[in-house]
Length: 96
Image 1 (tube, helix red, strand yellow):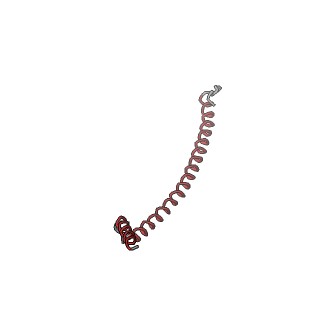
Image 2 (cartoon, one colour; image 1 turned 120 degrees about the vertical axis):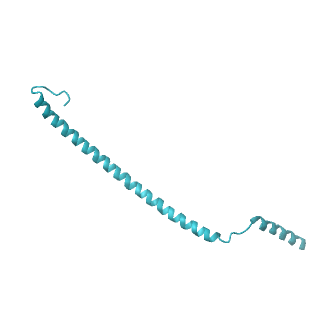
Image 3 (cartoon, helix red, strand yellow; image 1 turned 180 degrees about the horizontal axis):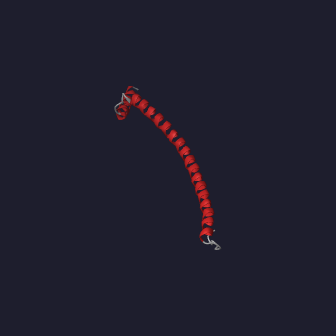
C-alpha cells in the first residue's frame, strides 16, 4: 500500500511539473482582456448601427439626386421646345 501511494505521489508530481509555472497575473490579465472585449463589442455594435444609418442617408441622397435630375431634364426639354420653335419657326423638333 505504501508503494502504491508513493507511485501515485510521483505521478502527481510529474503531472504538476508538466503544468509549468502559474501566472500570478492571470486574473488581472483576464480582467483587462475582458474589459477590452466589452469595449470592442460595443464599438462593433456602434459601427453596425452607423452603417445602417449611412446606408439610409445614401439611399435618400440617391433618390433626391434622381428626382432633381429628372426635374431638370424635364425643364430643359420643355425650354428646348420653346427655343427650337423660336429659332426654327415652322420646323419640328425630332428630339422632343
